[in-house]
Image: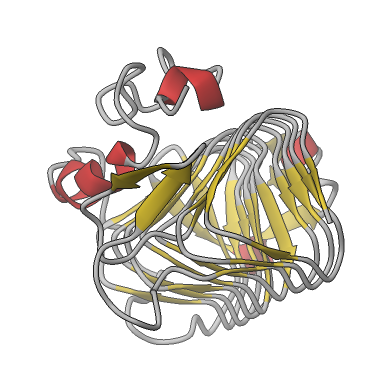
Length: 266
């Protein structure tokens, strides 16, 4: 009931070395740092890309090459639907990604997938692995150890650290996501905060139908099972486990512990 396969459909496909079907659902967070530190797919970007300072010019990434955005025609369609299109010398660059002027990447342990858009003002601290067709919006702040699947949104004024987004997970506006996992097709309403640290200290304890389980984690935010959603300005206490198809109503504070599939939390 509290294992990965009960929360997520893609345990055998997406990050299979990290998200093991029979592990407790918070275990991927325990292995995230080691997984990303040993990741072999980081590819340092060439000039005119600039590390450790805001980009002076928009750039396009395509098949390992870096092209100045001014040389391209960029059609900013819906990123997560694969509708962004980039043309260079009349040729369409299939799968090209765009990093807009003013974005800043600190450190070179980055892996940026196909069709990704990183908007002006985004701050990305490495390591970060960004899946295909993901959109990182203006003023997003990635504080390191951020791992995403495909079609995700890391939104405006949203702060994210040590977190996993599975496919089509979206945190569009004014969110805080620390030490958390967003399952497939999940969505955080504007202003949702996933608190990850207990006021009184100690490990985060999960209440599962009257049984207390010690996660062994000092910091643990929320874990959203597939197709779960939160309403605007909701807050989750440390150690909230929302099973599949769970809905949190706006302006709600969610108690720590396990919440059954299909629950409406008010």
